[in-house]
Structure formats: structure tokens, C-alpha cells
Amino acid sequence: MANIIPLSGNKKPFATADGSISFYNIDYKEGYHAKSIGAYTESLHKFVLPAEIEKRCKDKSSLWILDIFLGLGYNIAATINYLESKKITTTINIVTIEKDESLIDLIKDYDIFWPKTGYSILKKLLKNKSFKNYNLYLILDDFFRAIKFLSIPFDIIYFDPFSISKNPEMWQLPVYKTLFNLLDEDGCVVTYSCRDRVRKDFYRAGFIPYETKKLPDAFQPGTIFYKKLRL
Picture 1 (tube, rainbow, N blue to C red):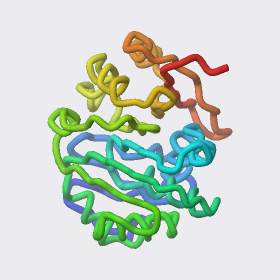
Picture 2 (cartoon, helix red, strand yellow; picture 1 turned 135 degrees about the vertical axis):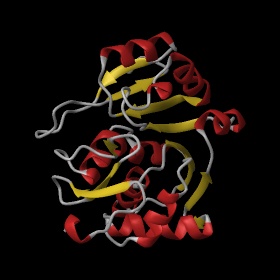
Picture 3 (cartoon, rainbow, N blue to C red; picture 1 turned 90 degrees about the horizontal axis):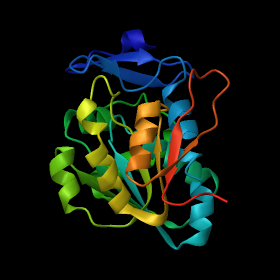
Picture 4 (tube, one colour; picture 1 turned 90 degrees about the vertical axis):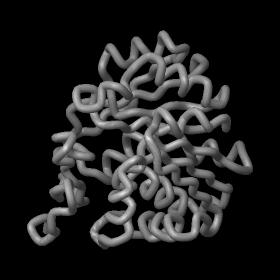
């Protein structure tokens, strides 16, 4: 399937283990997802499910999610698809930051991404900003400029930059402290990383780290961070 999808600018498509399509960023020399896990599977099991979004929706009439970064949109699409499958009607406000505008066109133009329901709604949100019980606030800017203008207490933060070796400026203590200040007292930050250095620096920023459940075929678990100990 990936062989019939053309190169898109600096991005080369490839098929992942669960059949979903991801892209390799030639500039960063890294894929947006792990080929061995699956783009959709990674988003669902390393971000959506650990964040316990269904439980959070039962406790609140509206939810605020910060998605760092939009990328190919899998984290948002998987979130929407999951909420739709559970018939959850809580108002979901999603703020996502992305500096690469070509990714927006990629999501809009290619009908290759799934889950289909999640991406269908994501495409509507990219066009109209609101659809059903979802609101999308897309910030096309550099993270360090954009983050200065955010003051919302977020319930969930998806922290999904490129790896520490490719995107080291994002994996720094000042960034983690900023996330701490943006997070609601009962909120969580979820990331795919399980590096000791990352967990220790998040702890230095005030967070309590917990390991997420490891998938049977995954080479590593992710991490979820809270402001308080989980009882």
C-alpha cells in the first residue's frame, strides 16, 4: 500500500505493523511513529487509554486537551474515534500546536489514515473548527512562541515531539515546568518516552511519573505524569 502513496514534500510514507500509514520526515531523519507497533495502535495505547479520558468525561462537562504536536493527527483522531465508540457527548476542546503547515494539507488531502471515523471528524474540525461536541484550536507556530499565550488549565497533555536525539530542545526541564504550570491539578501528561532521564527531569519539574502498560509487541512502555500521587 505504501508503494502507491507518493512522496509528500520532505515526508516519505511507510506502512506500520497494524496496517496504518505513517510518514518518515526526511529533515528530522525520523518517522512520526514506530513501524513495529503501528501508528494507530501507538496513539491509542500510549496516549488515549493511559489518559483515562472516558473516566475524565464522566467527571466533567467539558474537557481540555493540549496536543504537542499535531503531526499526522493520529493522537487526535484516535481520541475522537474512542470517544465516538463510547458515545461520549462531553464537550471536548483540543488545542494543538504545529509549525509544519504542510502536515495540515497532508491530513486533508490523503484518504489513507485511519481510524476513518476519527479522521473524518478531524478533517471537519480542520476546516470548520467545531463539529458535534468537539472544538479544535490549531496554533500554527513554533512551540516556544505559542506556549507563552496559553493559560488554560488542561486536563490532558499529549507530549509527542520527535525523539530526544532528533528534537532535544523539547526534552528539557524548562519545557516540563511549563507543562506543569499548564496542567490542571488532577490532569496528566502522557508521553511515549520511558527514558530515565526524562522521568527524572519531569520529577524535578514537580511531576510524579508512572509507567504505562506495555503492549505485547512493543519494545518499551510509555509514561504518564501527574501532579499528585495516585492512590
